[in-house]
Length: 40
Image (cartoon, rainbow, N blue to C red; front, side):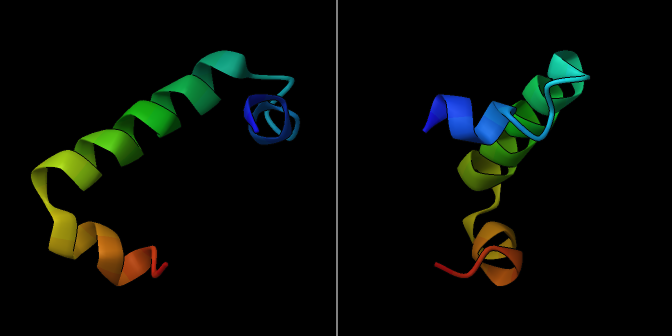
């Protein structure tokens, strides 16, 4: 899963890592905001 996620961002791993941390931060702080745009 980790390889599949980082594959489109192979040119900029720092950007993908920053995006991942930002999404995790949103999911931890604002769950309603997270599930609104990331409907599972």
